Length: 356
Image 1: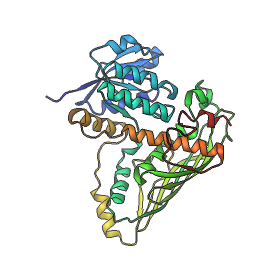
Image 2: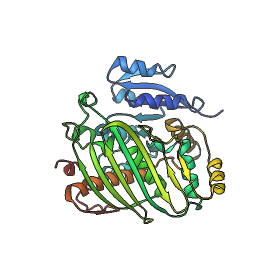
Image 3: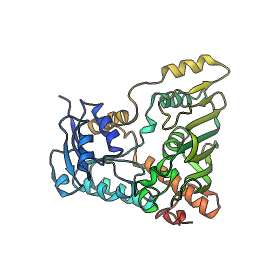
Image 4: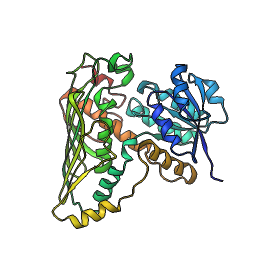
């Protein structure tokens, strides 16, 4: 009989969406514990998974439970590293929300901890897993689209004073960054997942919308290793919130919808002079579960067969490297060339580049 993995979800904010993702795979996972600081909130999230218990606080008692296979860290960004290390040391597989940690130095050290533990750590990038994204990826990977020339990413959302009433939001020490870390990271990961590694970054970021410590506005130019160029436009002050991804290649132009939030589900609009080959490729793209449910389904396959992780530590590192380069370029006014070596001034963290 196939094994079901028992999960402890730590955190009751985005953790609620994680619980829903596990519940969507009932033959593979059982949410055994929901861990939070507020009992009422934890009980409400636990009610989403019949039989789930509530545990207050991430502590040794939780780590000592021998009926937990996976610990899923859904805490604020500054609280990831310690719990991930402790969970690995306790012999548990680990899932962790984005951003994984606060620096390239920390992610490199964490990789060593994963190897030493003999367990698996999967970073979260659920926006990769959508039926629309699967179609775009299938078309670009076919080779029929030709070289990508340019792309644009627009993350134009609205966040007002009510959003920042939560004490840890808008604080460098807790969120580790602003709009580029907490909001646009989704769409930017989708872009790099489709177009590959970034060669250079030129960025300007600013705080224009709310009186907070972190940035809420920015513009970036990316040069990819392939030679493709992309622009990233970010604002948390848009009266009409929207997200949009557009990719222009030799033989096809792909444009997402403009609904706010994550656009991985689609629909995407595909335009080409010759529709025959394009329609065939779009129709042939694999379709299935989306978001957390799909990433967790693929994670199960990794645990059972040692298939490649759906999101790897190396990919989480690339996301952190991009954020590091954006903040460093903005502060110095210089183009930043990737990859960043261990001797780079921001290798130990980008917080200094945020304190302009």
